[in-house]
Picture 1 (cartoon, rainbow, N blue to C red):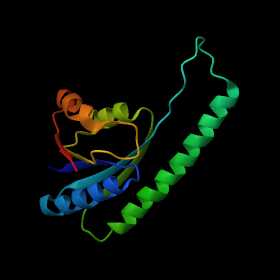
Picture 2: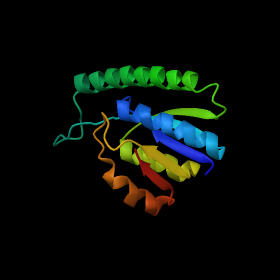
Picture 3: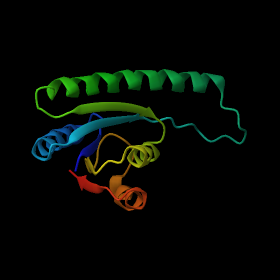
Picture 4: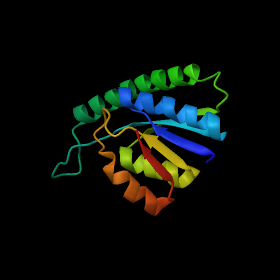
Length: 142
């Protein structure tokens, strides 16, 4: 197992999963990528137009969330910089489950370590079935 993905939302359980991932990576000689996804949910309207004010607020929220994730991931990189493990960080924008699936498909992760329940709205029970169809990585719920 050379590549470990750890989805991070800043919850206590995701931070604990990060610790576990780095410890495992030390033993296996793996690299770890911390991934945060800024959700971009738009409401459904009968028309295709989203009110300009809503779109502006949504954009502001995404920027703020991206900055918070950047701080968190930079903190994790600093925390583990002397661990001997190669640490990577990624911030993506979109639907959490879709972005996790995309990164797994595009970057061939061997293992995904995630908390059972964090701050995000994603219920991770979908993930093992969906990702098994994608690349069949190993999946660990912390």
